[in-house]
Image (cartoon, rainbow, N blue to C red):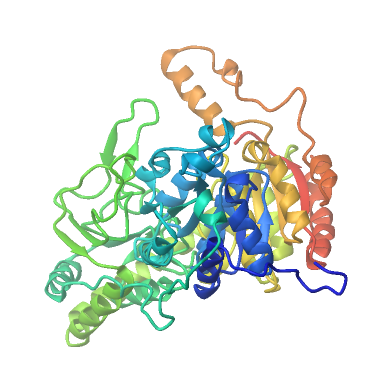
Length: 587
């Protein structure tokens, strides 16, 4: 950039400029990346030809770059670009790519290789950073991957990748751009896709006759339950599910892969361990994990038992066997369904609701049955929340703090804010004590270890500038994988409140070891070995402060949490990230 602030540009165009033209045309707003020489041509085009618009954000690990895009997509319904460096950078990213795939997050991943032309390939380094078919590394858990053979293939493949990524069920794609192509001068005009062209196909529509059959079973049942997993994804779906459940008077159990249903709605029976006992019909709406809540699993023997009544009807509306991986078994055990409707629930559910509503309108007995059932479910729902409010007071003043006390303390200071919870739920205590009354309150439950903080960064980025208070209830084991990523939030001024759920252990696995020890009659008190995060205990407040965060802690006395949270929120409202380290019980 010159002294007068004008960006100095090349007097000619390069082939990587075509990629930048497409990035702009398709409206991407952010790019996360870890730098690498394999895409130095593209990098220069983004910075100078493209004037760093959309802005690039450097991440200290490729996994974080992909996870930021994952969280952003969950929170907005819009994709973001993540760029990873050739073979070695791509091999840092598979965990994040895999979770984006099974969580149906559209992430546009760009990479690079080569040069594939041996005549311009540098000795050794360009060879070890080049793969014959680089996409093979992630092909089993992306919707599509491609490596254009020349600049002529870039526009068409970019458009196809975008369409595949955004078509439901959504998921990540990987585009690999040869370094030689990127760095070559552009010697001819390359036609871009038309701005007026349809970018994404219409939602998958249902067969109406099949929906009529669903209505037959549903309105004949005495105790129907609705199980939902992805149907309420942003930016649509949530209201359709509420309208449907109220129309037919069915209880709803939310798996919370997205926020599908308001937790305080009287028909919500999520986390009720007996919700499916006595159910004579289960309607699954965009569900892969149809056993969640409907079956009980013995943690020791792994035996699975169905909670529903014998002969219950099972109905599936969703994407069925579309886009399941040939490698990862994310599709669950096959079920013998009574009716299967392959359709996007966003298209199918309003039609099914209309069919049911028309039938109910002319049947007084059915109207009474539904009203009585809805009232009974409402009483059951209210009793659950009343019980949880009482249970939350157990060991209220204990130190280290209990999870319900921590959830209560956070809720006390955020309930009058316009808040968003990123991922962690304190073992469901937020669901039991908070009020998830809007679809954007929670993009979806936490995934595996080493995923939560990166995804939370993306959720916080998505809400930057909205005046919403973004809260991450952050497990200590998860953050230990990604401590350096704290720096990203500080550098790019991403305001978020992190409250550490710090039990100084990888306690999920600790709990598994206790189950095994109990079953074998071995010493349960030795289950902590290889599980604890103590001796020394990480100082998360100090680590955060060293990377530009406001921080406080560790806090062991629960009476000190309220004041610390209020001080932290003051900083977040100033546009800064803030962290409170709270020490929690092993439960």
